[in-house]
Length: 118
Image (cartoon, rainbow, N blue to C red; front, side):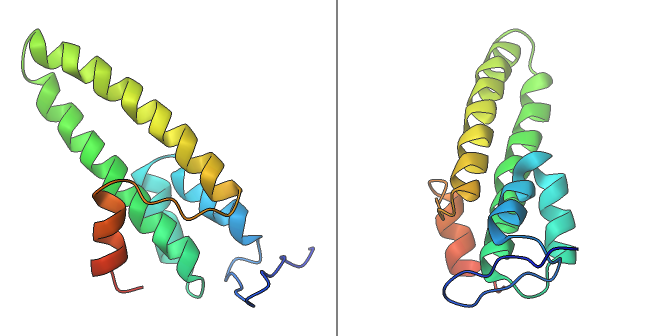
């Protein structure tokens, strides 16, 4: 197995994968892969940040989608808009993570950054 690339600051990953790949994979299946990487990754703070941001962001989208689905007509219409927003955000987060950028989702990213102990 090939060795994982280390960043210039010396950060490593527990899974022997490049950090940017792990960070991107935190978003692939939304909150589910966020939970998986939060459990599996023990060392890398950046990957843990992306895992938490994925859990909080897409967990909130999932809950909001369920609530909107219960409201006839207007809720369903808003759910379509929420789905489009979620898709765009999902793509942006994966691209940013792959490029090594730590992009904070407004409100959510700040909450994760300030309150989560990782």
